[in-house]
Image (cartoon, rainbow, N blue to C red; front, side):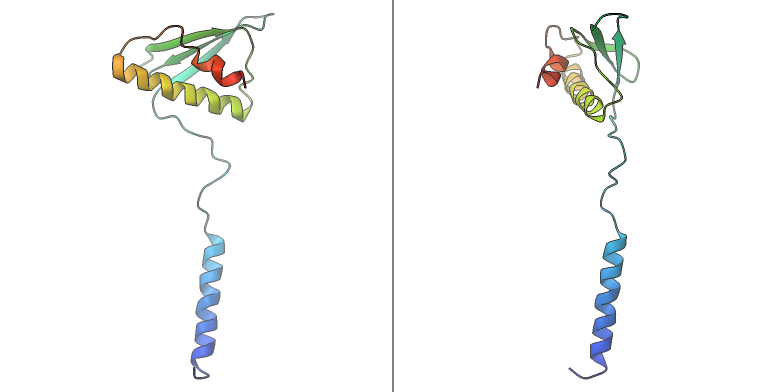
Length: 112
């Protein structure tokens, strides 16, 4: 290599390194987004029983489950598990258009 191409190579490598440090593949702070439907949790006062309901975006009830425990929706893991159960309920709803009963999709997620 001649003496003029070595500085060019060094500058090119440096520019690539600087550019790669400035990029970010995913944002770690962005919450997961569920595209279809939403969930609502109803907790009975002075008891540990709660009812989880899943709805379509058109506000049609697609699944309901009552649990003998309370859920803390301030926890990220709780919201993630509810979103996974919502996706499961939406899949079944889109396939059958019937409200499933006695599935315990939410309770199974929180037994672990």
